[in-house]
Image 1: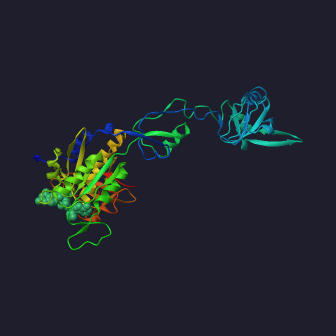
Image 2: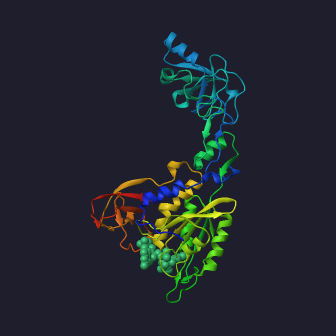
Image 3: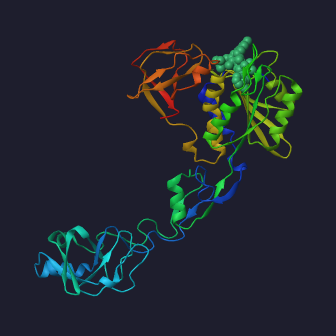
Length: 429
Ligand SMILES: Nc1nc2c(c(=O)[nH]1)N[C@H]1C(S)=C(S)[C@@H](COP(=O)(O)OP(=O)(O)OC[C@H]3O[C@@H](n4cnc5c(N)ncnc54)[C@H](O)[C@@H]3O)O[C@H]1N2
Ligand code: MOO
């Protein structure tokens, strides 16, 4: 049987315990196409298979030149402008490099992104030139600006200047977004090894719950927590596994937990974790050999939040976070405890497990709690100030809709006045 600790843990202590127990290495990886890797976590180091750019490329539309010619005219002969012959048959366009080497005293037309031909070592932008037609010949007159600015390498991206061949692109734990996928794909990775998404089983329980779409009878409510948790799990990078809503019977609860234990990397339950006669989550977990880590937190909303591990024959123990059923308690306790755990299990680098926190000024007062830290749901206005929602009861659906931040009112403060600054977790910008 589970022993109750004398004083509840603080949120920070509880988060540390949850994260210390995380075993990300128990979750494997899979090979996916690079586009499918977006929003996933890289599992292995990736090195560039070729340099970028793979040849010297022009940064400007203009003319590829030999800088020696221009520097000689400028520095030796004091020329203010210089006309060079255009090799009009050897244009270098993007995807169509010129194959001819540039002769002294000549230039070729070059487009942005096109390969600089052999012999050329600088580009002169088109706007610093004038085209002169002399019968069949075309001369390009390079202006005084062009002469003043020219130097070897001017307006050219050298081979490997973006990425060298073999360079480490990204390491294990990197979060892959569009930019990272572009870097990988552009250097030869059409497929990459990503971490498997942790499977998070969701179990909601309660005889009062009816399915979404049904009209609840008196005393019944629509079961919304599984959907809420599904959204939070996906946002955290996990894969939700929704178990059916179970009635308040030991047999049904036990069967659902055993099913979760077969395939999940984490089990999150909502409801049935308080001290009522019908609160069966902990008794059933105990029947199954639950190893308790903590049973209660100095957290509002979310006081009865419970965490521990269920042994599994021949495998890693299953971490179980039992969240209170009140919707705000479910949301806040998931955000504070389960989200960092899902991110840890997903293989993300440690500094990305928790949300960044920042100080916000209150635009209106926030209510506190004598014994518990209060995570107040608040909107953030255009000036970055936090305005707590009017309703903060943990059972109020109004208290979890249309807010931007969780503002942290320390335990022991009854009220914090407008104008004061508090730490906040920004959930949406
Ligand atoms: N004597 C005590 N009573 C309570 C205590 C206490 O310390 N001593 N703690 C209170 C606190 S704080 C909370 S929070 C709740 C938590 O209770 P449970 O986790 O056991 O949750 P339930 O009783 O099952 O449900 C609470 C509330 O949430 C609604 N609910 C449940 N599941 C869902 C769902 N899937 N979708 C939407 N809403 C759900 C449920 O209908 C209840 O209204 O305990 C206090 N009591
Ligand atoms: O902790 Mo309960 O979650 O306040 O209502």
